[in-house]
Length: 147
Image: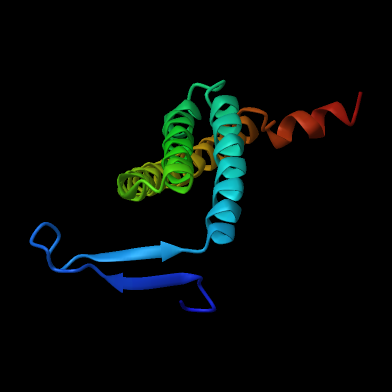
């Protein structure tokens, strides 16, 4: 077992069913710690995504954040099932859900950057337009000084 990661890599006996595969035995404390923090992160992402869905433009990245939080919770459930029942399929499902989580989170991050840039450009345009519309000719000020 690697002391830094808590991962033990053992080769499977070649009985024909899983030839060339490797079993990975993880430290239960490491899995429990990971599942606790992943659960916390998933709940935070679901809450942040739900709050982001309150706006029209921000819903573009809020929906993928909520879905990615649900995927992360699914990955945690698969890992907990693996820890409880020593189910090798649980690890595979957990990694599948983690891949989906990272894909959705990446998509929502890109959309968030695009929406943020569009919002800043819109604010700058609105400020420039309001300054241009509120501009008063110099003659008006000069005439008003004499009255």
